[in-house]
Length: 108
Image 1 (cartoon, one colour):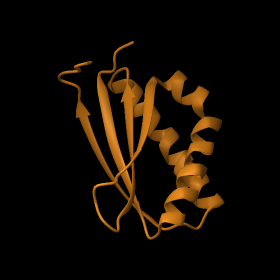
Image 2 (tube, helix red, strand yellow; image 1 turned 120 degrees about the vertical axis):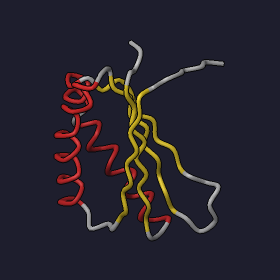
Image 3 (spheres, helix red, strand yellow; image 1 turned 180 degrees about the vertical axis):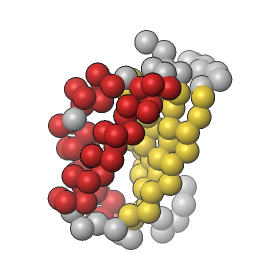
Protein backbone atom coordinates (compact mmCIF):
# COMPACT_ATOMS: atom_id res chain seq x y z
CA UNK A 1 0.00 0.00 0.00
CA UNK A 2 1.41 3.39 -1.00
CA UNK A 3 1.42 6.24 1.48
CA UNK A 4 -0.40 9.45 0.65
CA UNK A 5 0.60 11.60 3.63
CA UNK A 6 3.73 11.69 5.73
CA UNK A 7 5.02 13.46 8.80
CA UNK A 8 8.57 14.05 9.94
CA UNK A 9 9.00 14.72 13.64
CA UNK A 10 12.29 15.57 15.30
CA UNK A 11 12.98 15.23 19.00
CA UNK A 12 16.02 17.00 20.46
CA UNK A 13 17.55 15.97 23.77
CA UNK A 14 20.00 17.42 26.28
CA UNK A 15 22.40 14.47 26.17
CA UNK A 16 23.28 11.36 24.22
CA UNK A 17 22.10 9.24 27.14
CA UNK A 18 18.71 10.98 27.21
CA UNK A 19 18.40 10.46 23.46
CA UNK A 20 19.22 6.76 23.72
CA UNK A 21 16.88 6.05 26.65
CA UNK A 22 14.07 8.16 25.16
CA UNK A 23 14.40 6.43 21.80
CA UNK A 24 14.20 3.00 23.40
CA UNK A 25 11.20 3.93 25.55
CA UNK A 26 9.36 5.57 22.64
CA UNK A 27 9.83 2.43 20.51
CA UNK A 28 8.57 0.25 23.36
CA UNK A 29 5.41 2.36 23.53
CA UNK A 30 4.94 2.36 19.75
CA UNK A 31 5.38 -1.44 19.63
CA UNK A 32 2.78 -1.81 22.40
CA UNK A 33 0.38 0.31 20.33
CA UNK A 34 1.40 -0.97 16.88
CA UNK A 35 -1.81 -2.85 16.14
CA UNK A 36 -3.82 0.28 16.94
CA UNK A 37 -1.63 2.44 14.70
CA UNK A 38 -2.01 -0.10 11.89
CA UNK A 39 -5.80 -0.20 12.32
CA UNK A 40 -5.86 3.62 12.24
CA UNK A 41 -4.04 3.63 8.90
CA UNK A 42 -0.37 4.16 9.71
CA UNK A 43 1.73 2.37 7.11
CA UNK A 44 5.30 2.79 8.30
CA UNK A 45 7.53 4.49 10.85
CA UNK A 46 11.23 5.04 10.19
CA UNK A 47 13.57 6.28 12.93
CA UNK A 48 16.83 8.04 12.20
CA UNK A 49 19.50 9.77 14.25
CA UNK A 50 20.58 13.17 13.01
CA UNK A 51 24.35 12.90 12.73
CA UNK A 52 25.45 15.93 10.74
CA UNK A 53 25.08 18.44 13.59
CA UNK A 54 28.00 18.55 16.04
CA UNK A 55 26.90 18.41 19.70
CA UNK A 56 23.23 17.85 18.81
CA UNK A 57 21.30 14.88 20.14
CA UNK A 58 18.30 14.49 17.83
CA UNK A 59 16.13 11.67 16.54
CA UNK A 60 13.93 11.91 13.46
CA UNK A 61 10.71 9.97 13.04
CA UNK A 62 9.16 9.62 9.59
CA UNK A 63 5.58 8.36 9.58
CA UNK A 64 3.60 7.38 6.50
CA UNK A 65 -0.21 7.22 6.37
CA UNK A 66 -2.66 5.75 3.88
CA UNK A 67 -4.75 8.94 3.73
CA UNK A 68 -5.84 12.07 5.60
CA UNK A 69 -8.34 10.15 7.73
CA UNK A 70 -5.54 7.85 8.91
CA UNK A 71 -3.36 10.83 9.77
CA UNK A 72 -6.16 12.37 11.86
CA UNK A 73 -6.90 9.08 13.64
CA UNK A 74 -3.23 8.60 14.48
CA UNK A 75 -3.03 12.02 16.13
CA UNK A 76 -5.09 10.76 19.07
CA UNK A 77 -2.80 7.76 19.36
CA UNK A 78 0.24 10.05 19.37
CA UNK A 79 -1.21 12.07 22.24
CA UNK A 80 -1.77 8.85 24.15
CA UNK A 81 1.78 7.65 23.40
CA UNK A 82 3.25 11.00 24.49
CA UNK A 83 1.28 10.82 27.75
CA UNK A 84 2.64 7.31 28.41
CA UNK A 85 6.17 8.52 27.61
CA UNK A 86 5.83 11.40 30.08
CA UNK A 87 4.54 9.05 32.78
CA UNK A 88 7.40 6.58 32.23
CA UNK A 89 10.27 9.05 31.91
CA UNK A 90 11.27 12.51 33.03
CA UNK A 91 13.34 13.19 29.93
CA UNK A 92 13.12 16.72 28.61
CA UNK A 93 12.77 16.97 24.85
CA UNK A 94 11.88 19.50 22.21
CA UNK A 95 9.60 18.17 19.50
CA UNK A 96 9.08 19.76 16.09
CA UNK A 97 6.63 18.28 13.59
CA UNK A 98 6.42 18.72 9.81
CA UNK A 99 3.68 17.25 7.67
CA UNK A 100 3.42 16.81 3.94
CA UNK A 101 1.61 15.31 1.01
CA UNK A 102 3.77 12.86 -0.92
CA UNK A 103 4.26 14.22 -4.44
CA UNK A 104 6.90 11.80 -5.68
CA UNK A 105 8.32 8.55 -4.38
CA UNK A 106 11.38 7.39 -6.26
CA UNK A 107 12.82 3.99 -5.45
CA UNK A 108 16.41 3.39 -6.58
